[in-house]
Image (cartoon, rainbow, N blue to C red):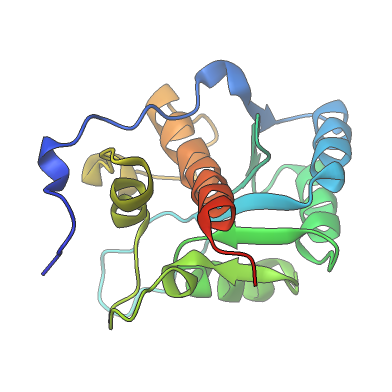
Length: 195
């Protein structure tokens, strides 16, 4: 049982805006993403995969990889040529900390599908536990740190992330997943007593 505030009573979390999201579609987009992400000390990180519904069905994901700096979320649709080189450079870099929630499957799928060996990754689901037995999710972290309610629509979560054209709702949902992880991390580090 959650001991935190009743999440439904909290004000809604205002996420990233569409104007601050870049769908990486061209070599120029990829170059700009590489430059911006390479300058960051920490980035938010997540992936989305087309859901599987049949028993024993293997996921063919990830289909979308989201990386966020403090002011921009970069969305990489897998299959777009320039994306993989940029993702490899950023995700394998030991100099950039990648933070996100529940990253185990994301890391396994990136290795399996794209041969990317992620380095310097912090899974906030376990890092933020304060003696609790269960891993902490983004919704609980947003309630705890910001006193706000992060809306995670099951309808959007289970959409087809492999389709070539993503809806505006999918884009915002995916961008928020990476961006909120970075915001939570920054807040957590700023409020943690110096060691």
